[in-house]
Image (cartoon, rainbow, N blue to C red; front, side, top):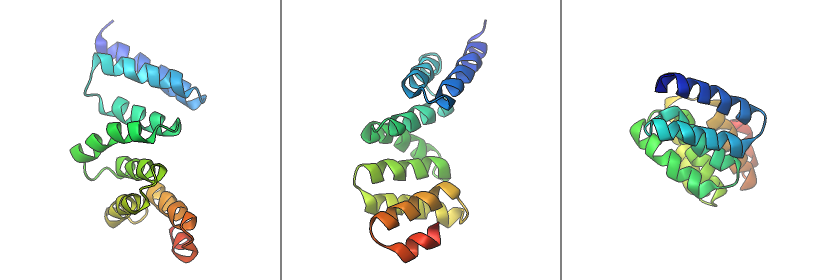
Length: 132
């Protein structure tokens, strides 16, 4: 079996585990993909998201920030960076991330939701409602 075939099988397994809420197991499978292809963008993103979902925001940011630098227009990556910054108590920076996404795509659902959540947590209910 070629490495490409292995990666596709691993990717399917990781997605299955992630969907089932088995976050640690899914992360381990994505890391196996990275053992084969260190630069695999989808696996790097998935590890960052999984770190964030497991309350490891600083580690998530270490995975996601390089992806945002590589693809500065990727709204999902930038929104997840904002989410990690928000989890780390860096709300001002998170808001910059969300607004950056929304400048290029005013209907970006992740950025709108996370922005609304951040503003509501800050007591800014009218702007939060606009985001929601």
